[in-house]
Amino acid sequence: MDDMPTRVLVLEDDAGLRTSLRMVLEDDGYEVVEASAADRALALVEGGVDLMLVDLMLGGVDGFTFIRRARPVTEAPIVVISARDGVEDIVSALEAGADDYVTKPFDVEEVQARIRALLRRPALAVPPTTTGGEQPPRVDGGQPQDEVVLDSVEGPLVFRRAAAQLLRGDREIHLTMTEFRLLSVLVDHLGRVLSRTALLEHVWDRGFFGDERIVDVHVRRLRKKLELEPTEPQSIVTVRGLGYRLDAR
Image (cartoon, rainbow, N blue to C red; front, side, top):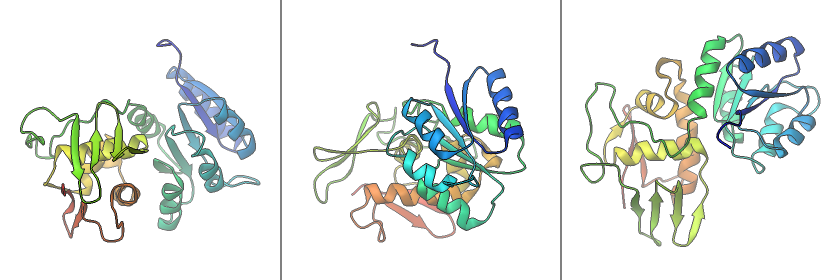
């Protein structure tokens, strides 16, 4: 039902922070469910949630393990909130299946902005504008195409935007919401280089808040689904010193 509130899970073992987040989110109109441990949180995920805020340092099962266990159950966006700010921690969390990463201490308004960006429906593709305001050509020179063939080397790899589908022949390749948005932006700029900063602005819709390592990890995850040889990408190409470019084959 359209009037059902968005359900947010807060997995945090600090009771004070968990309560503070709940109060802020409820003021924003979200329904909040709380857990201090991963097992309880997994039960809540199975009951259905729209987004998760997850701490990494938990008693018992840690946040990394929770994310890996939750991913087969739901594709709801996961925002990690952690005091661990090392590159390895960020990459490990994103590789496990998180969509975003916020380090403690954090600005509540930043968390609110990231939640709003992640909850946008996949079908609402982000505008394909460059950082300089230039409107680049779409794949067909006009409106964004609903269906684009990205690769036909071993059977057609077709991106169907309206259906939020990526198909290799008759087999559907599942995309997370973030992967869908990333691929949508790359398709809109087919053959053009996009910097990491531009991808942050288009996909995560938060400009200067972004960490470029998030882009790299999600590109790597998307390559595993698109490329025949992910370690030697032919579709999502790295342009050294500039960013990434999507080439149709």
